[in-house]
Image (tube, rainbow, N blue to C red; front, side, top):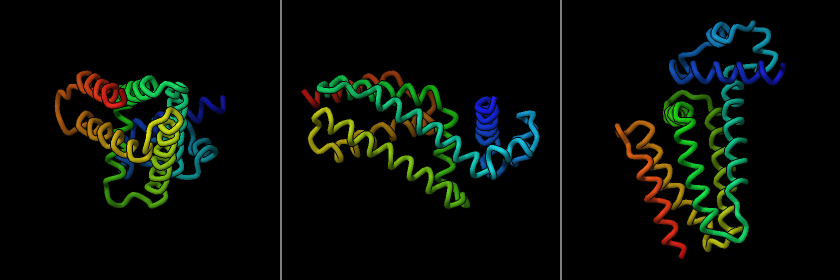
Amino acid sequence: MRQESREKILKTALGLFVVKGFHGTTTREITDAAGISKGLLYNYFPSKEAILGGIIDDRTQNLNAVIGYCKVLGNRDETISRFIQAYFALLRRDRDYLRFRTALVLQPGVPKEVTDLIGSRVGELFEAIVGMLAEVGVEDARDETYILMAKLEGIGLHYLGVLRDYPLDGMEEKIRLEYAKRFN
């Protein structure tokens, strides 16, 4: 029951944040939409920033699990292919959250604790990817992570809102083929 209430608050808040923005959403709107009391909300989260932190933490934990799935010890090509596949699956599955997170980071007036949290989580994920690539024998794993992530995040930005009718499936195939050729 406790976990269900927490998840309901986070899901409701994310839905409102996506539609109304972080600044445009009040805790009252979150409690009303979730059908809970303010007291219950504050039992789980002391502030709107803490709710956002919960959303970010949940998504980060999901990504860490994905990185664990991607590691195929001794098989660099399969590991990279799985990682690319997982990244594109994330784009498809969490499009609203990723659009919101990207907009949030770029808008002025976001509390420093929120931007610091996002920055630290992105940094942790980056280091996990470096470790994953190093474990499967990619030379200069840190530089390769910068290159791979720049490509994937560029594709992600275009898919999330810059270009209409973005050919996500085709781009996934192209980048998987590029990396398969690159490391053979």
